[in-house]
Image (cartoon, rainbow, N blue to C red; front, side):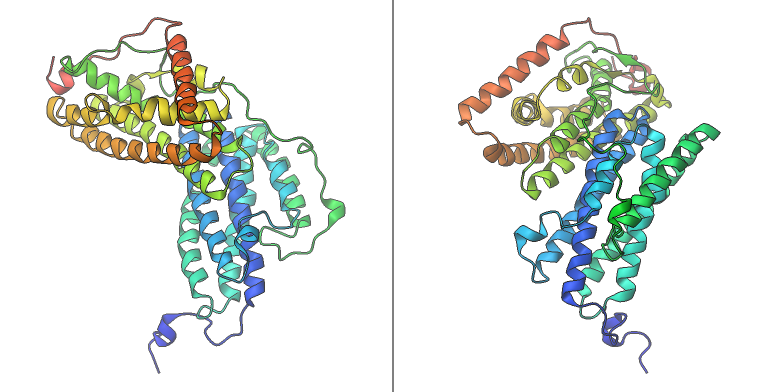
Length: 424
């Protein structure tokens, strides 16, 4: 007798399990559910005022995008044509997620994730692992182990947020009503993996009769004080320049929201487009978290560092194409120049400010921005129908609009960090 390592330690090796066709059908549905959750979370991070919830939604939309991509690719390995695998399955699940997009509040959004979609996904993944032959279908088993681990962690985080946010009787009743509605139509749609019976008579749209439109409204809680812009200084003024850099990183949550418009309001692109933009969105929110962590380490209180607001004012007024040309070509590509640029920011933190944490953050910020320029050039090549000079002109138009917006109000001073870093 082997000690559990026969068949390379894989489970269900001697049970017939699911057929290739059945596996492909389930995974196709699950990939679609993960894709729609990406859009759901990305769209609603814009309208969610709570800082910590915004950041979590940005992370989870990226992870769900990655799950969807892995599952779509696996479906192509199961005798399904690439075009079909990367398209939506023929399923009433679309109605369920169309309805979920119309969550009217953070309460409804969190309830849909914590009490409906994330548990349904986890149950479907576990059911799949129980049913499939782990030897025959090992490539899927390996993918699902990592997907389940991330989904479990994400659900635990969302549940903690939900417990903190949904804390009044009125909110709890609001959440319960939305959960009952979504559960009812999810069951009628045959569940997230398509294995249930479809009850077309119960597939009732209450809100999802028209496409969801992300509101062009700047929503923030009071986690950070707000300023329009801050005073800009050169590298010789070490403490003010470090404060400026920290606040700049902190304020990149507005850029993440801008990228959310690009992700959610650009239809008909290949899947690789959405993977790239989802990653870019999460990176911008990560950069905002860089500023938050640096503020907390440097000032012992993240709320002592202000975030600036002018970015959202112009980003929220631009079309997705204009916005992405501005970000990828107008701003981020320009930051590749040295000096100044991203390399100089990293060297300043390392050599002048001598701030270890910001040195690490700027090092990775620089690497991310190099990637973003590559992404922008790759995606705009097919998305933008003009020539290179027209693209540059479009980016410059955005830069001019940015400058005009920035000048609408005077800048504000930032906290004095001289006592923290011992520099003038």
